[in-house]
Image (cartoon, rainbow, N blue to C red; front, side, top):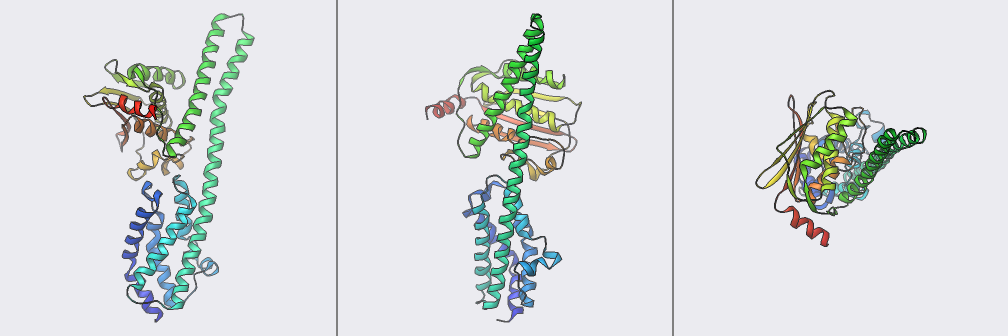
Length: 378
């Protein structure tokens, strides 16, 4: 087959290849449905342009040939591998499998119009092989970098309550003859240890959510209004009195108050961390006919709509957050979603320019007790 014919086929078949590859990935790769950013899809037209040119010139697309060409030095494999590494549900075998699908799709579409020559097949196979290598290397490097940052942040955050507890214990030793100081310092130690315990629970529960396991709920009668007021009081001691509670009084029901408390702590903590400083943070609690709705609202830059689904993936933050200076584990919202799911509820986000950001946690009124009992029985 003349090289120009196969090159033209690639140009004419770009959209067909793109659509078929994406359909097969969503159908055959378990993690493909968990992300909104498909780097390979975004850069595939450019890749096919390079492939078309290589076929027209009968030019190899192995490592040396690609490396020598400036416009191809930033290859789709690197973009693809980096994107998949930041989506924590992906594993390396899935990344490689997506390229196996791409290879099959390219040959399926191109050879539907007639067989390709041996030289053309070799060029295509070389290009896929090089892209796989790039993706695998980049995936491994980014994956390792994310893990290291997580460990560094985790270590830093765990030190804070430990240091606070140690400092207050030393105060008690120095001021043991002053009961008021001892009592106050003891309460601070207990608070620090409680924060440390909650952080460990967050880590374990978020990992359980990632593995697809439901959280085990310990249900008992409780008042969500009282739970939220306790969280706000504790937060106000650390972040000053910038919290506004909108609640009409007790909200009674059968809940896992401990898990809901940690969910509320994470939502308020996120609002403090990423909202505009010195602006009010509003926590609203409303009990409707079918569900209880908790809303945590902060003022600040909006979250891009395309990035919102990423917020609930473990260790994953939006790109705008990564570009800032805030630190965090990337666990909090994963835990919030896990708590909502375990109660058969949902968590959603509303964010817009000039309107701030609201995280809405909704828990059904009637189903909560039944679902929790079933999970405990299991």
